Amino acid sequence: MNISINTIINMPKKWWEAIVLFYHKLGSPPSFYRISGYFLKWLLLIAIILAGIGFYDGLILAPVDYQQGDTVRIMYVHVSSAWMSMFIYAIMGICGLIAIIWRMKVAEAVLMASAPIGAWFTLITLLTGSLWGKPMWGTWWEWDARMTSELILLFLYIGIMATYTAFSEDARKAARMAALVAVVGLVNLPIIHFSVKWWSSIHQGTTVSLMGESKITWDMLRPLIYMAFATKFYYGYSMLKRARMYLLETESNKKWAQTIVMEEKS
Amino acid sequence: MTEFLNMGGYAFFVWTSIGVFVISLLIDFFSLSMKEKTVKRNIKSLLKRKNLR
Image (cartoon, rainbow over the protein chains, first blue to last red):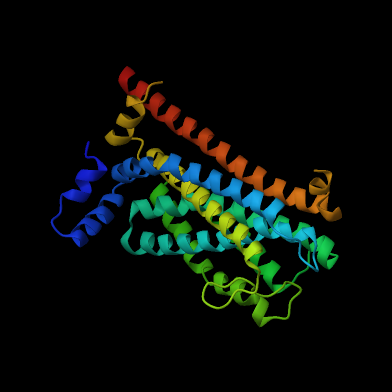
């Protein structure tokens, strides 16, 4: 099993065969464990560097808002976390589908490994939103569509983890039941996104858009982009590391997992 | 420097938000290494029990 990443990519004659082979490699727990190991420290390093630049840019260089003053700086953690809360859930929904249809074990691992970090980002979004709402709207919480649907997202994350724990005597079954909850919960994502459009709301509308024009000055958008990438890289680190532990744990009676643990110096 | 810490009078809201963000992700980070230790320790004790038999 000691194939380096180069031999995997060089072996096939055509480049698309290489991609297909890489995909199949990632589907096998020992290969996934080994290949993801190459990326861990780089993902964490890039995340820390980007967050450092983002905080410097957002807290010191970026201008104050003409209406909101310095509270606008909450945006750099609030909006980037909110994007992550939905981005991670979308990945979990896709993994859930793969887990249910093809019963792919690595998809189950990625699904369950994404839940804790997704729940953290959702909690950060709700708490920082509250801390932003109090000085600007005069209230910590309002049962408006955007906030309620984001709270439901937090309950979905918790529900997915609870479902897994409830069936924990059979990890495969537990993961499939959790996948079912994840797929059903996908319906909440468009509701969160369009909530500010569909219902008149205390929450402001979309300001930053991938497709259309963003209604934000570059000096404020730039730190937000740094933070958006920092959180994505940290998610990559956290999810991959947890997925590796998930695979080690659920395959702990298999040879590859035992070899990895025994070969490490203790 | 005091002006920076004061955040235009919104120091509590801005710095608590940053704190919530950083502390949450730090908890996630340390729970990862705790999980790693438990999983590897469990596999090691599983192997020890197997070898004793």
